[in-house]
Length: 390
Image 1 (cartoon, one colour):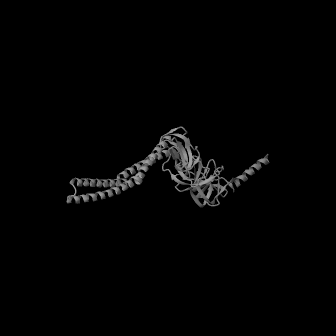
Image 2 (cartoon, one colour):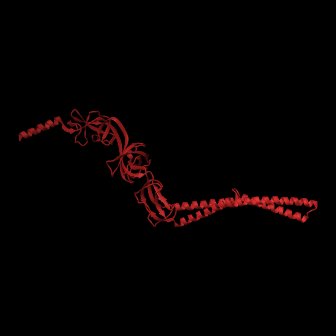
Image 3 (cartoon, one colour):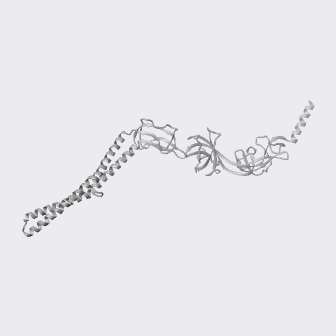
């Protein structure tokens, strides 16, 4: 009994003299990256609301929510019987107007020119008759009545030529009949274009490549302009929207790189870049919205997926670092560490630099090779300790 007591006293004395064995962290030089961790979701830089430009009844819906669509792909088809008839009527009117133009060019104008040639020949003959009658009248070989008849025939021949000239002018390009016919043709073409456009509105097409993320229309529904029927997330425009704690706002900046991962694929990381920092802070959450662009989004990303993001805010080369678990009061204005010096734990105030996920940069107070006691060890300053190197 006495021997056991003596042995215990001796062991305690030796332990006190040598100090308690404590695992320590050794200060060393290393490259340090400071990151800000945030979580958020995936979304497109913008979304396209798809609707109808006219009131109509849905006859067919060709795609389902979640499908990938291509630009110009039919999405929704509306009833079009009435508009098809309107288009047919407008096309018939245009064909008639075109026929009128051809009639003026191919029939009326040649006929008027032939009539003018005939009238011109008749005028020449009538003029000659009148001239002979005038001579005979002067010589007393013709009566006044005969000369008056010759004058009447000459006036009629001249009128016929004028009429033929007027018909030619009217039927050729720039003439009144041609201008009227051309105006009718232009109106018919405009009416056909309008009818065709309205008919085209009955088939709603995908405005661009993308993924259909919402659908709120079914066959038989009556749709109206301004009503959102589908929502399209355009391809190639993925961004990450995360919330940054306002305490970290001073660290983030536009253009900073980041590594992101979807919660559904935690082992797959992809790069992103900060492109937007909301100048306002959400007072209820004490955070600000930050958006990151993804240049080459992986195929497995889906709209509204939850993501985690590590934003690289700073980097230091060959910095003196300690594990964060070795620094006491790291978030206060007076952080400190317990260093092992001459077999005792010594409190040492330090100045911190970058703070990574696991490592902390020490600007002042610690040198390379110093041993620091972890904060989890129940050691107080002044205690005798034996450093147990990792």
